[in-house]
Image 1 (tube, rainbow, N blue to C red):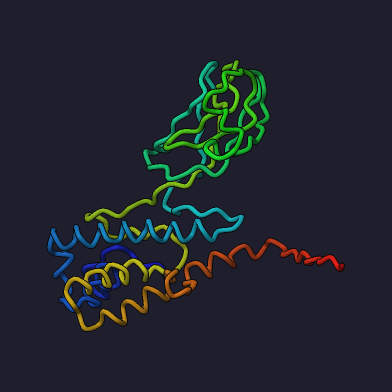
Image 2: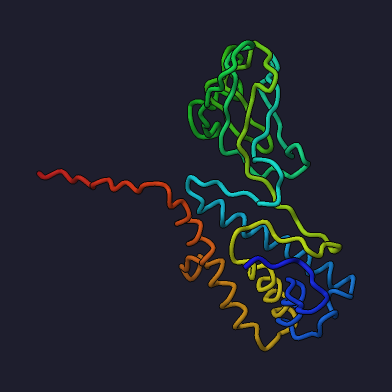
Length: 254
C-alpha cells in the first residue's frame, strides 16, 4: 500500500501519522512541531537511502530507481579530444550520483551508434596503465576513481554526447512541507515509518522497541542474523518475464 507523507486530517493515514502512533504521541505532536517533523523527515530520507541500496543489490537485470524521478538514470557528456577523465557528481536534475553501472561511447566524431566499453579495476590489474598511458585513439575500457571515469585511451576526437553512463542515484527525498507526496518505491511503504520509529524508540527506550526492531529486520534483513528481508526478496523475484536457465554442474570423473 502506498502511503502519502503527511495527512493531518481524518483518516490520518500519512507516514507522519503512523509514526506518531508508533512512538506513542498524539496526532499533531510531530506534524505540528517543526523540530520533530524535521527530525522525522531526515530519518525518512536515510531510510530511503537504505531501501534503494537494498533494491540495487537485489535488482538483477531490472535496475531500480526512485519512481518520483521524471527521467531515466542515464547521463551524457561530450567526448573532448585529449581528455582522459570525465567527472560525474550529479545528473541533469541535480540528483547526486552514487555509482556508474555501464558506459557506452561514440567511437568516432561521426559515429551514430554507441559501443559499450569494459570496466576494469585500475588498481588491481595490468590495465592500471590507464593512469599513466598516453596512447590516443578510441577508448576500449574505463576505470572508476572517486567521482570520475578514466578512459584507457585518450580520445583523439570530439563527439557531442559521446559518452553515456547508466547510473545509480539518490532518491527523491521528502521535505517538511510535503503532504501528498508518496515515497517513490513500489512496495513496503511501512518501512518509512517503522524504521524512523525504531530509531526513536532506541533513544527514548520505548516499550515497543523490540517489536519495532523485529518489524524492521523483517523488511530490511540482517547480515548479522543471516536474514534476507522482504524488500530484498521482492526485488530478487521481480523479473517474472525473464526465463530462468538451469546450468548443470559437470564434475569430472577420475
